[in-house]
Length: 147
Image 1 (cartoon, rainbow, N blue to C red):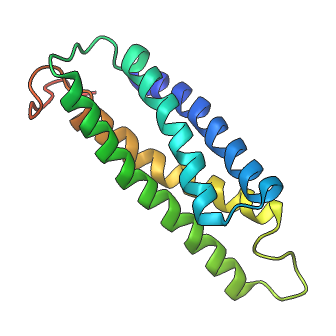
Image 2: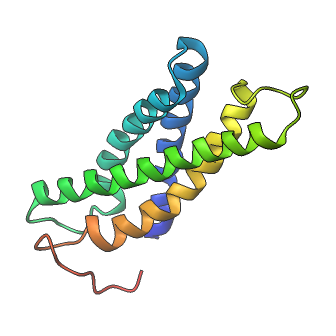
Image 3: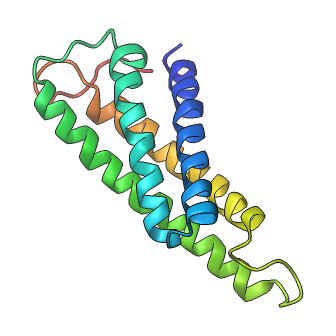
């Protein structure tokens, strides 16, 4: 059940991230990397609240501050992976699509790059959240459940 909850929270996070990214990049005109970091950060805030209260709510934490620090570290790594994937997809698109096609910065191309990056960073995030962030007990505890 936990992976299903994580997926539901992930959909919410993705919606927040995806919509914010496209608004910031296309409507506001923010540079792509800055828009990605800002939108990802909004998704992170949503993620912590829902994952702490619902997905991993049955795992009480004696050290919330340490848990939150682990959460932030995991999300910084996730943001790095997500941003690198956005940049890589756009660079590959630019390298392989003829100049007559849509530009690498068109709304459709940006949305596709972001969608691919979300999938890649989601696998990383679930693994790290489950095994390191939302672990009951002391900050360095290792989970014993096989989920």
